[in-house]
Amino acid sequence: MKRFKRIFIILVTGTIFLTACTEDLKNLNVNPKTSSQMDNGYLFSYILTVTGGRQYVAKRVNLFLCSTFVQQFANLSTGDYGVGDKYLYSNTCCSAYFDESYPQAVKELAMLIHNMEDDPEMVNNLSMARIWRAVVFHVITDLYGDVPYSESGLGYLEQNYTPKYDTQQSIYADMLNELEEAAAAFDASKPTWGESDLIYNGDIAKWKKLGYSMMLRLGMRMSKVDPTNAAGWVQKAVAGGVMTGNDDIAFVPRNENGSREYNQNPNSWPFHEADWGEKISKTLIDFMLATNDPRIDVMFEKGSANTVHHGMPNGYDHITIKAFEGLGADESLDLNIYSDVNPILVNLGAPLIYMTYAEVELMLAEAAERGWGNVTDAKSHYDKGVKAAMQMFTLYDPSLTVNDAAVNAYLAANPYHSSVGLKQIGEQYWLATWMNFYESYANWRRTGYPVLTPVNYTGNESNGQIPRRIRYPSSEYSVNSSNLAEAITSMGADAFTTRVWWDVEQ
Image (tube, rainbow, N blue to C red):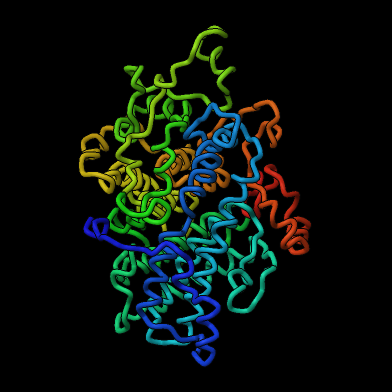
């Protein structure tokens, strides 16, 4: 795709967007509500590149925690690398997303929206920022539950350094309203940021699709806690117009020759480190082998010491794995027997994907299966979703093609059946969101699919159950203690086993 090839340069210090104190003293008479379009454009580009955090965050949360919670990767380590695999606690891992999102993407979005909200000429750019704020916040709240939202990012603007925690229910209500208003406000007669928009290059039609597709995702997230409103928002999303093809995928292009922290793909860095020990989970490999999934050789490569795909089981360490693999206590395990990720997919210049057309079609299949109004024909949507998921890898490289014949053969061998439709949809969504493990983890908690067997490693923090959320940063107990205490009273214990608002046990 042409937009993937765009070259962009992002300066890497947060101070590029905020003037130094001495400069502030010189500009006391400058209206803080005004900003040039160029400055706002750079700010938006910066926000897009820092969403989800640097490699520090991607490694600790997306990979160490979420990918192993949902058994797509496994790791034998008992240190930080293996905490998610074994449901162990690490403050560093649990804190990372919170600690980086608020002072970067959240703060800069607050500034950007503040800069534009009173300028009617900026309506398109403001709508993009409002949509992206929902992209940022739904991951934060899905990971932690109740979080600062309505007062977040206001330290610079209003000197509020201890924001209150909003309930997840209220956050979802506001995000959905924001998406609805932002999508409706686009105006083809007004300017856009153009190339400063690293996702769609200022294409209003595609941004509207992303806004409504996000509405679909958030609406579907409420399917168990509030099915009536969930159905209503899903129907609004469909009526507004969601993604219609892989050309609509929302991703931020990355540059392998750029800054490690801000230009390269943050999910890729661990795979370029010598001590990285994460391998493809046995759960995932076995599932794909059982269905003869043509993606298996696109997504993974066989271990150099093996002639077949072989996954690493979750919940083992370097000692206990030996018995599982039939080795004696004094024998060494060759980690090269396990399948690895295809290196093309973790190239430092690989795109960072936030939402795909495949997800949209699979959610539409679920809506149809649930009988939600204006969405019908679950099988058709399911088939389209599977096909889109199998063929999206050409986004990384044209060589990663799964042709129509292979897709059709897979669907013929593994046909959709309404009697187990929700299970099949959940399993395919798990596959379609591979590498965006924040979404894999959230949807697994909502649906329970695929059915996963938890591990029960000695000393785990969740009584041998897959965690339902991650814990708040320890720093919040000292810097924002009273507001945090109110959130814990409202939501429940700050523990892996506490369910977020939409994660209803059934």
